[in-house]
Length: 88
Image 1 (cartoon, rainbow, N blue to C red):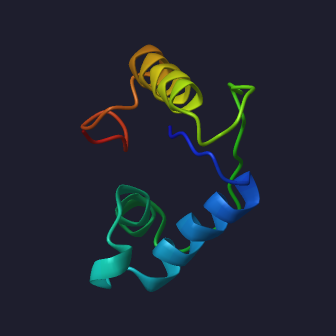
Image 2 (cartoon, helix red, strand yellow):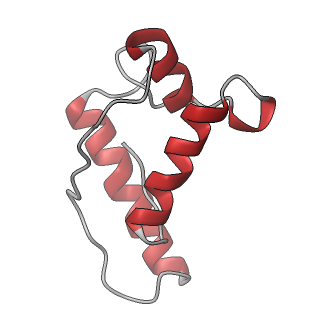
């Protein structure tokens, strides 16, 4: 679960690069750790957009709303570590 102001394609590409380059220190992320611990390779995966905030992505209001939505779904879907990949 995560928020981004960038294009989803770009963000997913960053996750894929982290998985590919793990365990290099610049790519040691919860997503990369998960894939290497549980999947051993990058296989196809699905991403769903479950919330969208209208407005300028760099505005404080948009950022605050994205973080609020992210936290809501992390709690609702129980994706915070150790149950999921979200860390504080």
